Amino acid sequence: MKYIAMNYKKTKNHIKTYEVKGNGKKIDGIYYLSVSDAEVQKVHGMIEEQLSVKKNN
Image 1 (cartoon, rainbow, N blue to C red):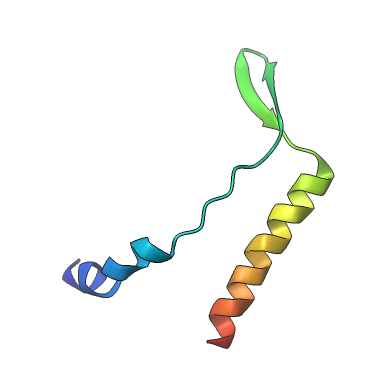
Image 2 (image 1 turned 60 degrees about the horizontal axis):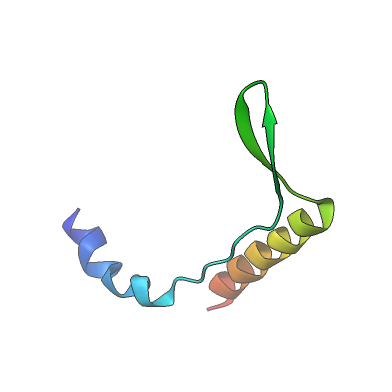
């Protein structure tokens, strides 16, 4: 636990946020976020880009 605290302390300054765009839907009493295929692809690309940046460093 100490290792995590010491080595990841500065990562809080490097967090990027993104709000997924979609429409709320209630199905069988449970609320879901319905997201378009284009939005899914956009988010997928963003994550993929960040992971490849991390691998190359």
